[in-house]
Amino acid sequence: MRQSMYNDSVVVSRWFGRIGNNLHQIVYAIFTAKLAGKERVTPPRGGPMRQLFDLPESITIEPDSEFRTRVSCSFRDERYYYVHCMGAARADYTKVVQEYLVPHLNSAARYACQREASSSKHELVVHLRSGDLLNSTHKKSAMAPCSFFDVLINREHGFRQVRIITEPDHRHPCLRSIANTSVNITVQSVSLAADACAFMHADHLAMGADSTFSVALSWFNTRPVTIYDPFGKCLRAGEHICPSGKRVMYCIPGVRAVRTGQDKVDWMLNYNSSRIRKDGDQCFE
Image 1 (spheres, rainbow, N blue to C red):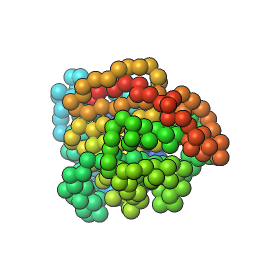
Image 2: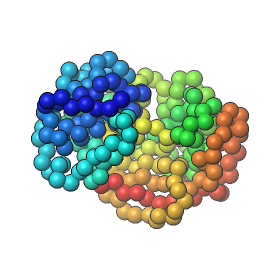
Image 3: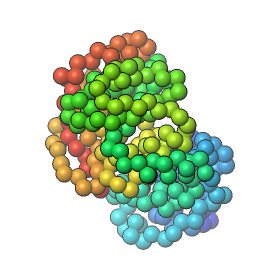
């Protein structure tokens, strides 16, 4: 599946995957329209995106000559979300979603996001995705050990308020170990709108697995965001002052090894936190 361009519109022929992938689709379609001087983006009908957004038949794109002078995008393969854009900063993603998607939030999402925006809590939001990942051998199915969250909460950052966003079945192996810490823990799996808006407004976001969902939703936050990522390459990149937010990488030896079922669960539950170290910061522009 690829984006197509007809006359004055970039047309996304169909949705691929779930909401996280869909957000990548629509944002890269808007990027493509800006670069090609197209006036509209035409999204597919239906699909997961409609659970959060009342998208129009077409989205009108404003000319952006400044964007065109510094950004170039190319397709890595025929599937849209492997678009590679040089020169695009996180601020460009935030600007696009604020301008072209926030106005189309549906009523449930708008209400949930208003509640999140009114909160002044200093908290760590943890995304614990499990489901099919526990038995998957896909290269993106790696899951962080439970001790990674102990390091974030107790060893390095001293968060006293932690909110866990997870699936309704509450089967993630790390739920119990995190709940046993001494901080104030909230486990949330209320509704798609409530969970999505929590990610949209999270200033501190911890990843339990690769997720286009929570990362793409973090683009909606106009404040500096810190993302804690357990999949660092152990390069010791160093710490930096990052006024616009950052991705904090952690070195966890063996985290990318393929494991399934009980082997994966045992590894997650028993990984020694002394082996985990901060790998460095990647500043957002």
